[in-house]
Amino acid sequence: MLLTALLAAGAEAQNPPRSLEDLLRQQVAPAGATHVNDPVVETDPLTAADRDYDNKVLGAFQNAQARQGPLDGRWLVKSPDGSVLYAFQITDPGDGPGKVEGVWRDPRVNGPDATGFVDDVSQAGGETVLAFKQAGFEHQLRLRSGGSGSWSGQIRTAGINSAVLMLRDDSLETAAAEAPPYTPPPAPKAKSRSKSKSKSKSKAKSKSTPALRR
Image (tube, rainbow, N blue to C red):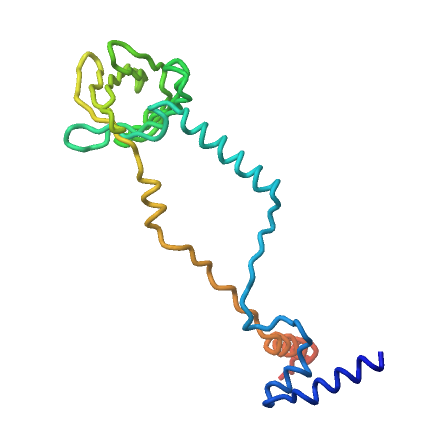
């Protein structure tokens, strides 16, 4: 131990600090200490088993998404002038039209007749037919795939056919992408103790001092 201390002292004598900053660093910071200006070294807390599990979960999700049918997602049914007639949310697991489920919403009306379920989904003559009821009327949405994620066809209501176009509704994704970053509100300012103490003292004095009678 004594020999080690003598050797260390001799090394410091041969290499004296070049500046006051070096002297302070030698006395305050031990060898190998981490300083504020040192580069941050990021380490991966996940083990190989954790990364393998995450990759399997991601792969299963991507495979499930790839198996979804062509109707899966949110859709807007529009008239030729571009006005929205109906909005659909459809679940298509890719196992045929008999497994397709969906709900619809009519943005033109309010109340209980504004929403409902898709009663039946079928295929006939190369067309995909979505049947639903609204306010006692039966509707048939007869569509053909355009091959680019869009559908075109007709909606039949009370024997009257009207041309429609069904497009994916990406408004939520667009709104989320264009939304400004969330800024939390400022924290409420703490009341000063001196003011609260002075107020409590003044209240105590007013209670203890009797009112003067004239």
